[in-house]
Image 1 (tube, rainbow, N blue to C red):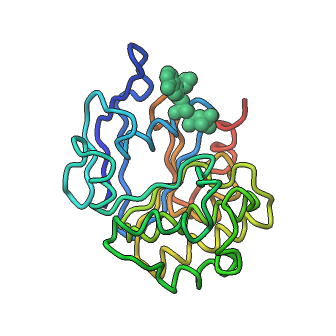
Image 2: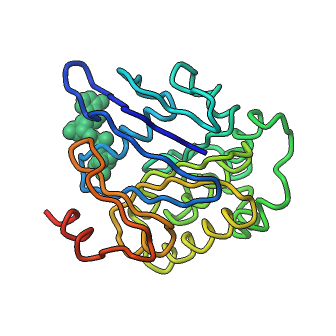
Length: 229
Ligand SMILES: Nc1ncnc2c1ncn2[C@@H]1O[C@H](COP(=O)(O)OP(=O)(O)OP(=O)(O)O)[C@@H](O)[C@H]1O
């Protein structure tokens, strides 16, 4: 569904991703783990066309995305939940979700979004900035889902969120995959969350994938070693 091959990304002279390869199958959840500064956010931003790629290819369903603008990638079915959630704090919950609607050519928030996230229905008229971290994360996922993605990218969705809500988010992401049949690539530092949701776990270090495990046979101790400083 998603394939990245020999991806090189640099900030000026400083190359951060050095020929990265990865793929995500239809309906698969892949977690990409790595310590701070290893290149997870850069990878997500380059997939979305927010950071330019130096060379390499990013394809979705076989179609090349590398030269497309961000909004064109969204129209092709790629959606992004950024690190820090990036909620529009002065807009209401409903208005935040509506910002995603144009990409799907719709005018109203589909009812199934509020079914997935009942708290957003309760808080529809509240300003985004007044929500808790967990509620904002749900809002950011809802905003991404209304674009009707085939592939959902999430950058460190558990950051700054309390453990009980992390479990809710894990459950919701699995439900989204099962019900909507989409593929999910999630970057993470919390191993328990990654092992809870992912079919496959990758480790990124210094801009390269250095370890890969299927969930069923994951070597937790080996992954934890990569994450410890
Ligand atoms: N705008 C930028 N200009 C220059 N260097 C950058 C920029 N953004 C990130 N970097 C550098 O690129 C490297 C990878 O950063 P990136 O944010 O992708 O890592 P990360 O794995 O997502 O870390 P974090 O968990 O802290 O978000 C780091 O060395 C960082 O300092």
